Length: 251
Length: 258
Image (tube, rainbow over the protein chains, first blue to last red):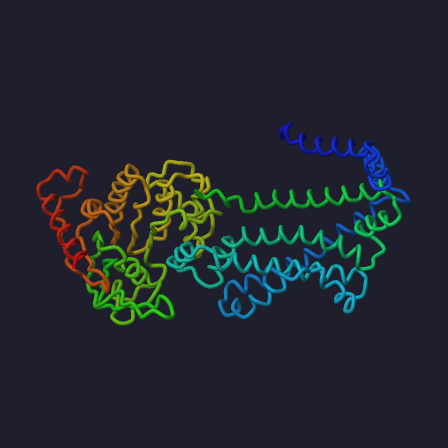
């Protein structure tokens, strides 16, 4: 890790501090970084006002939703990739569904799933599985025809060909899909916690804090959710680098 | 019984490239035969259906009419080794070099350890001197092509089809690999059909040169390449070599300008 990487965050913090003490905006809307960090630390400790249960809820919903999407989306996408006919008949529907902003479906989900965890998790699962399906499909249909041919000349066909050549060839694209879906999942969980009636979660917490002008708490939760997103994404990138070490290295 | 006797008997093959285009006749009444253990070079104008012919001989596709016989039977997947021009795209980047070579063996029933041991033998025979536990993307082009060769030989196919295997390598590497190939052929006596774009390479390697016509491809002419083996790159100094090369080029140009 290079020291240079700290320059950007430090500059932002300085600007924030200067704006906060300049008095340009009322302290009702903007608090200083020092106060926010102090507040954040107390909120991260266990206690009555701790944000830990909310943090846990948000992470739980995100991971639950993405897991369902992975379990459903990868097999469906692989199937679509293998069969030209299935691809042709479903691609438009899936692509249309994916292009539609998932948040537009929130009222619909309230109708069918109420306002509990079921609605939030199914919203996340549905939207994320569409992204995963499309990527898994492209991964399979864009797998190298040469490698497929090589294996076939060796007498390897059918399921063995799929398992040993097509699947590993599609894996990098499948993981790109999962990574995209993962960041989408967090966005959707936070939004649905704000607007899909909820008693817990960081989205709810940010919204409530804003309504009640608990300004340090609002900034704290925003930063924490940012950190969650960053850590999720970085961990996934590390996992990818280990699972599909060959991508981007073929000269 | 001698193995690797290949007969291509009056085959026709046509393709539809897209819906609104007429069918293209790629191969038309193409006939030749290759003796067991013979080394053949296929040479012809660009886009003359050499790759199509290779796919048919490998058993990947069937001719529209006519037949191909490999030791009195139609070619079956798994009995013919194919080495493609694009070695980057033909190796499995998720497997190490040694596992690439072992792949056809353990996929066809050997245990991993036996397959790997055999693969190591094959690599030693070919003189692969780099670390076999590295992944293909860390190897040079020549090394990758050697791994592809070792893999195609490892499952002991009766015929080896090579589709311009050295054409995307630099000159020095391709010259070295030509000699490696001749050594391997000398040891194993596999039947080899070598598609080439380079007349010098074709003449240096093969017993016989088969010149194809433009589309629809058929055999234009066959030429024996009589130089004694083992050959060295200095055969190019022989007057016979110059005559033969000139004759092949003349025939080739005659076909190109037809």
